[in-house]
Image (cartoon, rainbow, N blue to C red):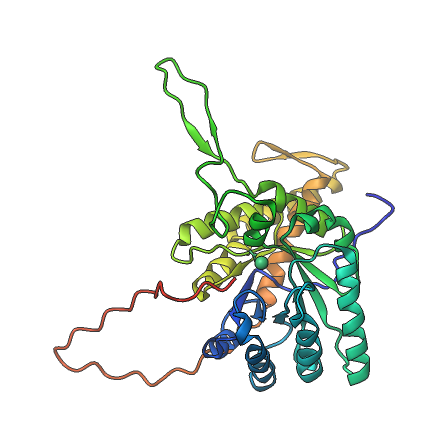
Length: 359
Ligand code: GLV
Ligand code: MG
């Protein structure tokens, strides 16, 4: 280890992060009672310019009126390049700041952007006498933000997490795609021809560099790296694949732009029982090895050593955090009607594909 110890800044379960447009109050109650680890009420890109003032009012009212649970409420403000931003911070934090856990800052380009938000929040918190300190979630979604990611990740003790905003990042880097997340058929590797002259094409992951880069900057500063949106909410398999790639690289969670993605994210970013069982076996085997004065041993025909202890501890710790999470309030259930005799049960409605994407 280095003499510089990196501590996790503010531990918080962040497997799923549900985006809810501030201009759609009809979604608020369900989001508050739902199972997302974190919910962010959006004042930025899911809200049309003319709706911004009303969305701000909706968000303030919803924060004050609904039970959002502990430590899971965030508000995405507008970018520092817009005139909406100062009023988002001032109005929302002054009027509802005591109940807000996090502010999400989009399109952060430099550490000075964070400095400016930190200064505003500090003044409002002091003036209002809030006891809580609001944390910051930062979206890395521009070439400038990615270039300055190390300084951004170290910019304030309020920082908790870095998020990869894949759609804006694609726009900023002028990537040739209009998808929100997921792979692209043109980003492929062609194999050499085999004896029959056949060639195979293998899709690559065009977001690999960006996500891996973000994971390093986040972890080196004790922050959570979180993967952003996956736009095709009817493609659960595609979401699953993207989320697992991010999890394997070290991300702690992923955005959900539709409630169906919350369930997936919670499952995919929790260690599976098999992973936890294996991690516990590693810890046990290493304990025995150390008792016997050995630094490395074989388990299931593979080498494990002291680094394996640290790997296994990551999984066991996460499993404990997941296990300790209190279930959210169950939405109020209407009394079930008795089915009329000889009447076939109604078919379940398919998830509406018309719901708005919320990123
Ligand atoms: C999220 O904000 C994105 O741009 O993907
Ligand atoms: Mg964005």
